[in-house]
Length: 75
Image 1 (cartoon, one colour):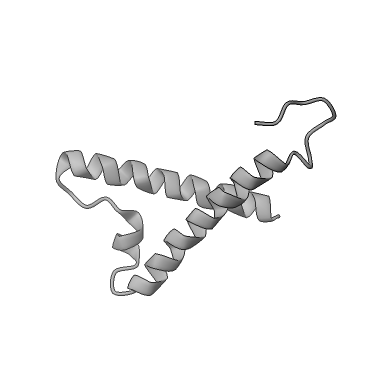
Image 2 (tube, helix red, strand yellow):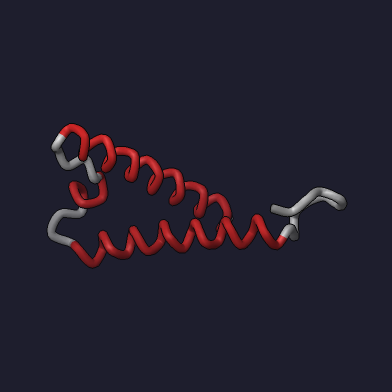
């Protein structure tokens, strides 16, 4: 369950970063988190923190290899 939540957070965070980059080229603010959470900077910071934690969890999970079949190479 934690893995699925982490993937969802990573997907949302990645899409947001893509929109931020596109917005920089178009000179508009496309940061979904800041647009939705205007006036709640602490909640916005919490969302960013959760996305970062999700990435770290997925990276650690990939390296531990606990759920990989025998003989499969670890990254």
